[in-house]
Image (cartoon, rainbow, N blue to C red):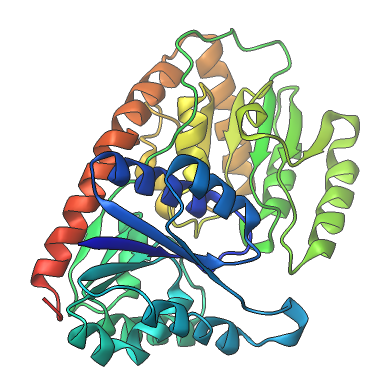
Amino acid sequence: MKYVFVSNAEVVWGAEYSMLALAKEMATQGLNVGLVVPARNYSLIAAWTENIGSDITKVEIGDRRGRTRLGRTLSFIPALLRQPKDRVDILFDIDLLLVAAVLKPYYCLRRSSVVLDLHTKTDSVKGAKLIRLLSRSTDGCIAVSNFVTDQVSRSIRTEVIYRPINISIKDNYLPIPEIPTVGLIGRVDRIKNLEFALEALAMVDTPIKVTMRGGPSTEDDQYLVAVLGKARQLLGQNFCYDGVLERDKVFDGIDFMLLANGQEPSGRVVGESQLAGLTAIVPDSGGAAEFVRSGVTGYTYRHMDRLDCAEVISKAIQGERSGSGVRVAARRFAADSYNASIQGMKYANAITLLVNRGFHA
């Protein structure tokens, strides 16, 4: 049996790092894994080649300006038709569900299966209905959190598997400085609700510094300009934007990580911050809340409540100064929950379970 990861990403974000970690562990376990990916995603291709192997099928999808979303999705069909029989295609984007629907007879004839890796949450009613309909063409779904599972059809089996995270783990923790730094980490995108975060941070009643790290969305570069303007207006010299940093530098100099998106599918950055020795502060809605037990492995605040968010940030700072042990407990939880070897094995076992019970088995 061959396991083929199918990604339509043209840049590497958190989901692609998870995919690489999963594929690497599955390959380590002796499983045959391959990749179908846009030819222009040079970073993902290089990382796959270095860590996993050369079994890569590159898809030419044309320039961004000269293609439609539909055309981009359908361009994967020829590449999948060239794959061997007796395999499982793991679709790493909801757009690729259309391919599963089109190729459903093909999968049956080739004794192959298709599984959806669900790590996004749509805010569109129409989009949710379409996902639910098209997901019926798959053998099942592996979801990143319970929060996202209501998007797929109840007629298919869904397994929730936390994704592995490879990041250096801190065994020793520096004391919280007199003026701690709160980090806003990740892609600069409207869905991240960064304006709310900045407004809440400006209301914190104890001195803090705020550092934002991450790149802008390729579709909305102007959003970064607007966010930076608001940050300087509200926080002045207490705000710093570092742009995109190397992965092993992202959490350096940061004491607390604030997440503001109440629709976050899981909040990979939460697990990364826990492993890096930071205290995570997240809304009480969305997938990120599944990874934080307030006051134990992080802190939660009422979603979209600026005052409560500000008060929880102050509470978190006081807690760490008084030796609450949250950072230590969070690291222990994260080390157990995101272990690459264990989660990679769970992921492979989940695929086997789904395929054995799926439509095409």
